[in-house]
Amino acid sequence: MGPIDVVIIVAAVAAVVAVVGWQIWKKKKGKGGCGCGCSDCSSCPSCPSAKKSDQAGE
Image (cartoon, rainbow, N blue to C red; front, side, top):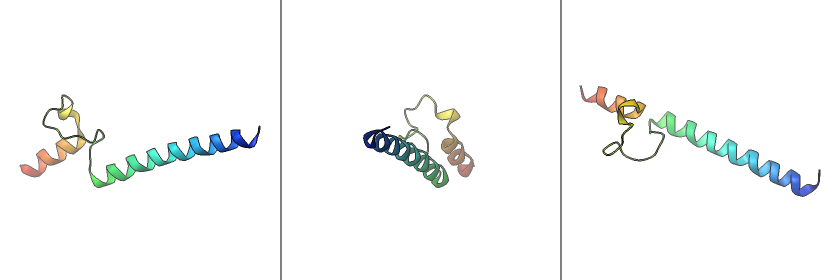
């Protein structure tokens, strides 16, 4: 395995870690998974952030 292979593997692992970390951060902030609003979303009833806002309004 050459140095280029190592660099590519490290970059791929860093990208995966960054995406997973971003998703965890968004979940802790209470944001949805898609990043869009729920007004035109067909999956809104199954969205955890939509359920939170519905319960808060009750």
